[in-house]
Image 1 (tube, rainbow, N blue to C red):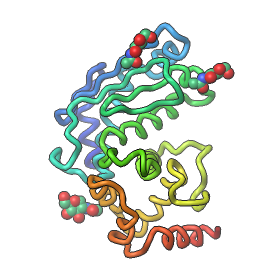
Image 2: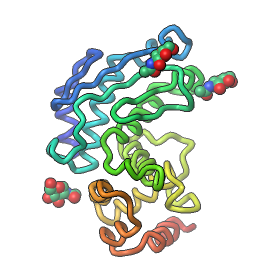
Image 3: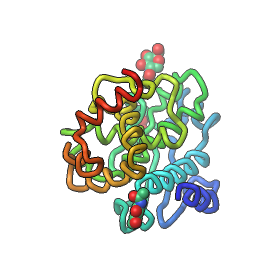
Length: 227
Ligand SMILES: *[C@@H]1O[C@H](CO)[C@@H](O)[C@H](O)[C@H]1NC(C)=O
Ligand SMILES: *[C@@H]1O[C@H](CO)[C@@H](O)[C@H](O)[C@H]1NC(C)=O
Ligand SMILES: *[C@@H]1O[C@H](CO)[C@@H](O)[C@H](O)[C@H]1NC(C)=O
């Protein structure tokens, strides 16, 4: 499934700033090309490459979500990335991803791998269901976004290791590692969870999909890693 999706993606990706795949257009703009971070983005990453990554990350996310037809996906036909001076690392508002040029400037290490990982995470926010419930249950949405980043092979070295963390609802890497455990118990768990999130989050989804409450699953997870 994932292999098929990746193969289709590589056929459809075009090395231009506006990339079209599966009736979705990907557009990248650098709004900070006069800043050091914007210059670094142009030099070490590039608009065309970023467009390809948005396309690949979208196909990859649909694969993880088991959304074989567009009818199962959020109705988005245009995804854009703007590199600009903003706060933090990056954020996504609807189908617009904003990457902070200052973060690109400061990053010490392989900027291509890091920016790609960030773009995978943000692309998930474009496609995941249930964001109307984000403020109440942000951890599950951030956890799913980092889960997809993990499955794509872009987990950074500073993340917690499997089994680490104090609770399933810490979000980001801690939740992503836990979701990876849940997905190992029942491959496709995250796909089913994402589909259920369309109606907002409920702890009961863990019981519905895996037959155990989230507290018990967390204990099992910690025990599996000797914690
Ligand atoms: C682009 O940069 C200008 C000037 O810094 C700013 O006013 C504008 O909001 C930026 N656009 C986006 C989408 O970030
Ligand atoms: C980048 O580094 C400068 C200097 O240390 C700092 O003031 C700034 O907040 C950093 N920006 C980001 C986005 O990390
Ligand atoms: C993926 O979705 C199809 C239906 O669209 C379903 O038959 C299949 O079981 C799902 N796969 C997983 C792993 O959930």
